[in-house]
Length: 232
Length: 234
Image 1 (cartoon, helix red, strand yellow):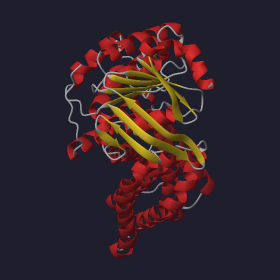
Image 2: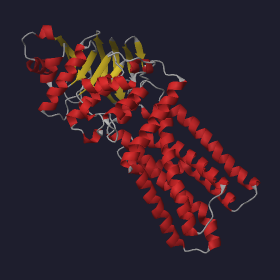
Image 3: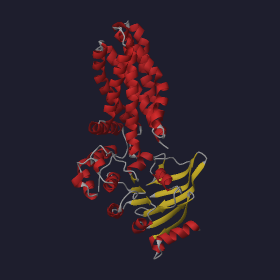
Image 4: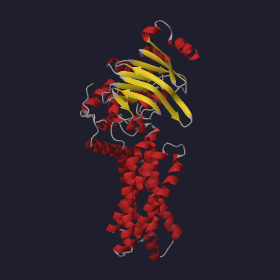
């Protein structure tokens, strides 16, 4: 579903990604882990077609980036640590707006369906700026799945959430994964990543250093594996 | 889960996206009145300050009208342009727009249209206030046409430059520094054409600034259409 070969990203003299290779099969849930500055967000922004690679090949669902970016975007849902929502619009107005931007033909029934899914149906007519951080993040997931994408990208979705909101987000993420979508999530939060993902890739110094599936990890603690991978 | 998609962006979907963005901006502004109130209060203050500062006789007031009006519109327009793009940047909404599978020029045209509507509403309120304070008759079809053309040119180039300035930390001061030099031709042409219509000059003397205004609008909209994708992408 996602194939990346020899990806390089430079910002002026600084090289952030150094020949990164990455592959994800349909239906996989991959947690992309790594220290600050490893290039996780840069990598995700390239997959999301928000940033152009300096070198290398990226294809999603058979479409190449950046050449076929519009086709990729129809198959992509993105959630970042920022909500990407308008505070002065209501929950349903936000979804209606993004539905029109994505050319979704059945907007009104879809709004009801998505708000039910993220548990915000009772607050559909409330302005988003009155929502808590956790509610905004749930609505952000609703916005991202609105056009029924095959691939979901999550960039640090737990940032700024308290325990209750994190638990709710876990539930929503589980339902997203259970729907058969391919998911790539960057996170510092190893506990949540360990609960949700089927594969763990560790990004360090601009390349994927190590990769392990849940099965291969067995009873090994992810934190212990992560520390070992970074050290050595 | 099944939502039917029209995957390939078409001309129709470009138009729909433009209208969706403008509609969203107007709905959000209708609630917050953040941009509109700042532009309007600023405009009224400027014409009030000019009124007391100049204290001119009626004939001289007539001759400075075009200049005072366009200075007011340009400054108020800059406030609106800055705020309109800041709203997109602050909560990551610009990324949300860029992720949509539509031609990115739809974002540009949607923002131009909403900025133009804000600017025109402010102008519609400012003109009668100005006419009352300065005792000048501004209800001239030619002048209204110039205001429309000048506002289109100003918002066309202003929206493009605001999209660039928004990426910088010093965006509030950067936009006027970028915009005013580039907008000089549209402002000079608009002032000259406005003066011509207000003084009821022969059309042959107005033709040149009016042509410059139309040419500027067409050229800058075409340039913005070609480069907007690169401006907003990292």
